Image 1 (cartoon, rainbow, N blue to C red):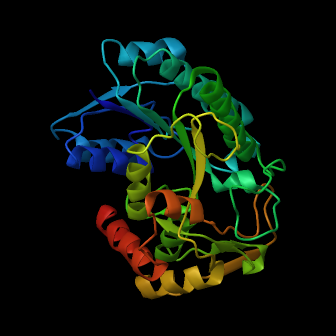
Image 2 (image 1 turned 90 degrees about the horizontal axis):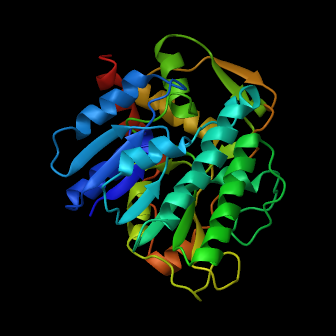
Length: 330
């Protein structure tokens, strides 16, 4: 029985598919291959998976319920790793309808698929550190209130958590939500800071440094994220167990991050060292929808699954730079 991975051509989805296949699992990947960023990059990720035994792929927009059902027709799904979504905090201000359709309607469609799938073991889905919004207490804990989102993207991710809670309560559907903290690494997303800065520096262009550099992020390397996802996937919550909502529904939410906020200017310095080039910095004010700092309290994930990130940015950023130069033949 295969594991369904949504967003299989995406950054995290690609690595999760690869890791599951290495464990001997069958994987059915779906993705709509949209043009939010280069579809060629998504196709290149898929090309790495093609030909691996146990992998199959179907182009599908899961926010279209008929298309989703057609993609999985005749397939007995064991578990689902739901990573597909319309990503990006800033783009949600420009194109809110894309987030409503993909992140709200799409998540509801996945939940309906789960509800109507016999003996489904587990749904693991992607949430985001963005749900903490305007919170000023650090580190961010899953016990903190998350009722003040500062972007539509964050609001959709929090809504996903609430939808999942209701389905877990109504249908005893085992689910785990993971709040990702600034994921980076080879094959990453072109809209993320590490990629944007690398591209600009290599091209001799200035980098935009928001809040005049007074920002920090809990940068989390892709290998650590994948190890956490796979650990959680194998441990579905049971009814009556402890969870983020303090009720008996089989639903848990965890932070997954490096547990170490890095000042933005320190990250830029490491990137400059890895590239052997200095950045031209444009210091700008904070952007709408952004937050000053993120910092993951991962104590719950450590306690339940022994999770601990192993990759500092001093190691992870040079790995990204090596891949970027190779991918772009630079």
